[in-house]
Every structure is written in structure tokens, then in C-alpha cells.
Amino acid sequence: MGSLGWWFTGGVAVLVLLALVARWLWHLGRVVHVERCRELFRLQHERFEEQLVKAASVSGLPRGLRWVRCDITGDAVLVRDTATGGIVALVPVLVQFEPLEDGEMAEVPAARDPRPATAVFSFHQGNWHTAGRVVFNHTPEQTVAAFAELQRLPEHV
Image (cartoon, rainbow, N blue to C red):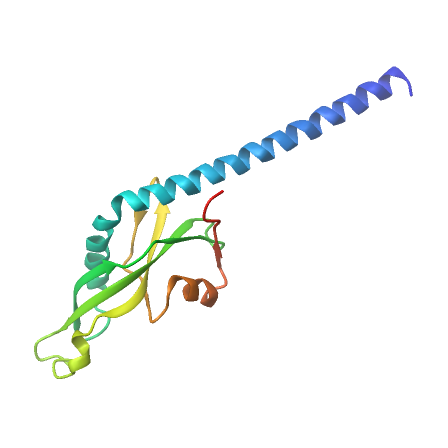
């Protein structure tokens, strides 16, 4: 192999090494981002209960019921939405409703019973947001299983 061959082999080796380092740094950045998302949710979860009730109340669903309160009952499960690439928190909640006066549900005793659900929060632009989306009668794990576009993120890396 002539001196040109050694230069070529050395150049290829350097490029491969740079690609491996870049991939490792990219992966490390994603891990740090996920941990930051997780910590921000832990620090602010009380505020999110109120945000969820406000956002969900606007939807008018379920019909004939008014959102009274929402209590977070466990830890968030972080997933990646493969459709958007964003991070989503699936949070177990207990939702309390009150029937609207003269509404369809006013005479239904079960309308006031707390209902278990999974609240959906998305992380973008450095903050957690909710559109009031709630998946009733599902735990976060069941929600991940029901929606193929959601991929669970590792708990601790």
C-alpha cells in the first residue's frame, strides 16, 4: 500500500470515529432532554391539575357534565409520539364531575362518581402543555398499548 493508501485509510478511520462520537453526543443530548422533561413535570405537577381542568372544560365533553377537579394519582409515564417526535406524559388521574342543572345527567347518581383516566400532556418549547385530552378507563400503560404511535421512554438511563 502506497502513502496515498495510508492517507485514504487514515481519513476514513477519522471520519468513522467522528461519526461515532457525533452519534454518542446526539444520544446523550436526548437522554438529558428526557430527564429534564421528567424533572420539570415532577416540579410542577400540582399546577397541571388546574390546567387540565380548564382546558378540558372548554371541550364540552363529556356532555351534560361540568369538570370539577382532577387529581394526579401517580407518576407520569413518558413516551415519544412517533408521529410528531415529541415527548408526551401520560399521567394517571382521578376526575370529578358535576352534572349540569337541567342536563341529561342531573338524575344519574353515578355522574358524581370520580372516574379514573389518563391525562395527556405534551412537551414543546421547553414547557409542558395540555389540550385537555383525557383517556378514560385506561391506565398510562394501557394507553401506551392502545396507541401504536406511542413508544415508552426508559425510566432511568
